Image: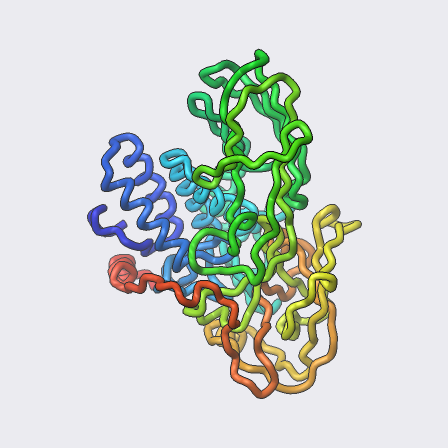
Length: 462
Ligand SMILES: [Zn+2]
């Protein structure tokens, strides 16, 4: 936000401001049709997802400027201001409207359900300013050195960002243009859209994002109406990665998704990430989309030093995390030296308490018996360093994970998204072999960030 638009190549500076500013840039691109704006907003987006986005969709790892660090600096602790997540929602939504490409909604959905939603407590009246990937239960990472969400803070940008973003979600569910009806997000909803061919009602029945079956009922106002129903097939359901970009890759490719119309399997054409059903519709037509949700293990691009030798667990569009309350120990003691076989991974529905109805993932891991207990100061240093090899004894333990957005609602103890994995006693921590992105080149340039930091510092703030 500090250069002529032709020279924008990567996001820099304050991450919240960037998202809101970039949203405005997309609006200028749409309203003026000036191609240099459209090119700039896409260049910025590609750089962002290739080098600067947390797996939760959080952005802005550098707490000193509440902003972006150099490429591949996505921290083990992280800053990831709630405001920055809201900026990503607005930015990606506008990019979709400009291009009709599902990849922007794929990012936006991850931000909405993870990086943004974690910013508010389950009761809706407490907030995070900062959304870390790992805490030790002692670090007062939030404003006023709090370890939990706060109800109010003199800089109330983040509560405001939540309260102006979440109520917009119903308006993000569907989109239409001409005789195209887009289903952009999945949730139990219904709507009516006016297409060129006439009005049509759509109803979704689903337990998404906890389950991947989506049943749609299509009711055109008159039988024989012809239009294209476009269903977004998320990146995590059709590629070997959780979200667009080069940063994270799954160990296993996802199983195939499937689509049925009135009980018959169909093979639709794909267009910009949407499965397109272009046909003549009649009242009561049923469409069934099945997006399988296996538990997936991701590694980070090997230049992301903070996550070398670590894995993150996702299922569907949700990132999962290990919390102390479910695991009975400071979470830094846990490790998954071997990834579980598919039949060792269990997904159950939580039966009671605040997280009732949410999925809980469990699989075998180990507890490190000789792991040092880190105080606040040591922990901050620990987060800034690449993972060290650990030595000493371990014993079997069950690792239990809950959705990241739900963490810190049942106490303010330790948590991690990234679990130590390929780190063995007496050996150097090495990145996993199956990092698919290893051979790909990612852009590296510090120029934009250094300039941004210099400008920011003119205010005298650190
Ligand atoms: Zn904020």
